[in-house]
Image 1: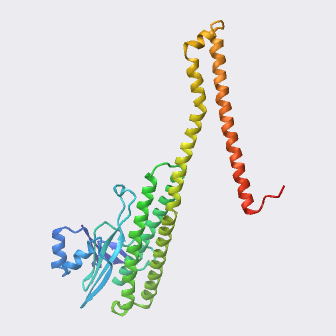
Image 2: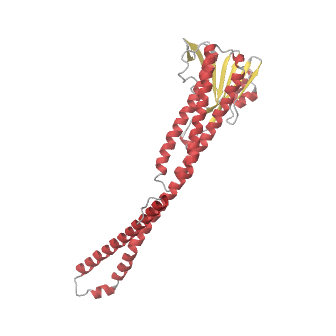
Image 3: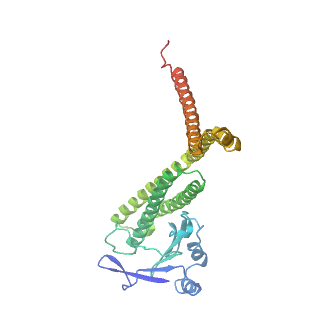
Length: 326
């Protein structure tokens, strides 16, 4: 798919003439031949722009400059919480700017640079938009992480933990991609004279470098939080499972004497013992007796638990030196 953009009253407008920026999205074989023949792009540089694993770089040959950037890949439900990055190629040619990418992208959705005067403003706008794209994905990842934390607190399985591992893997991709873009910005700064930026454009470029550094720092913070708390969240899941087993064990202990007595009462001997008593009264009284046994068992277990907790509290106070001598 090919899209063309031009400048109209300081804004980049699709289809405007003359063409300033030409965007190729996932070019097919015919479009690739057009890029190599009509635009004289190097096949290796074109392949690099379409390779998701390609590192960011800046190359200049004669009057042509190649910039390979990393950008977040558009997320779909099939990705199952895995956010990845892909590559985007900016080819600054005498006839204009050619952009090649694998995913549909809104190149000029950034609102920082409102007045576009030339092709260099367009490149700065694309750089700013790439950073904004990363920040938007980081915000979504943080919201998903918070939602998963709430679910982990009540979970007894590994599903949500695996989802958090996936988000952690996504942040690793983002950190590498943002770091790769930072190296590209550093290379551009080292050869800033070649791009012939105006004083205003140079100030905007400095802001872009700072924004990218802040974006990288934010991604690292999110990654450290996820990594540092994964063990704690795993312990929460294990603790939830232990609590469930404890409750089931208490229920089993409560019903154990009741089952024994109910088994005895279910035999024919009980009918023989109570043959002189009407059966509704006999079995009703026996049911009340079983309920009393279960209640007494629960009370004993609760009492033992309270005494144990009290001993633990006393032990902690003694270790801290807070318990007064008697």
